[in-house]
Image 1 (cartoon, rainbow, N blue to C red):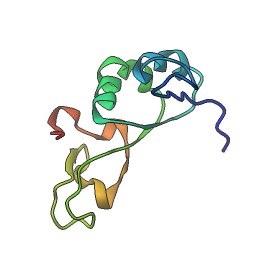
Image 2: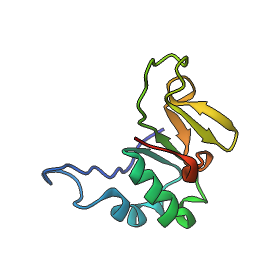
Image 3: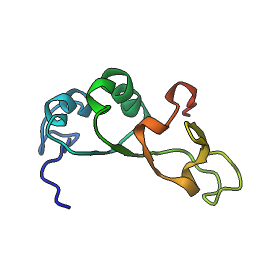
Image 4: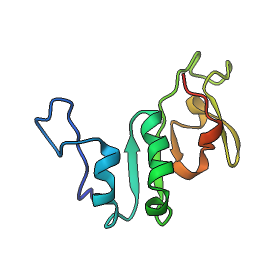
Length: 109
């Protein structure tokens, strides 16, 4: 597998395209076979609400950042609701399909 393009957003603007990834996404999504995303939860929510129509036609995997109390699945602090039931970020993730997460029920601290 070869990565042919990525949106690289630097905070200081020295590299990559300038702007929020959620604003730059529509210009890049059309040619992609699949999408891999790493970032904060609010960015994922924006992607699902604003760009669902663009992302429904291809697989989108996210690396989910959550607070973890133990990191081994015993404290349940990183549990989230998905279409396939409860999942723990520390043991079942952190990589999830964007569409599998029930975003309306996710409480992010």
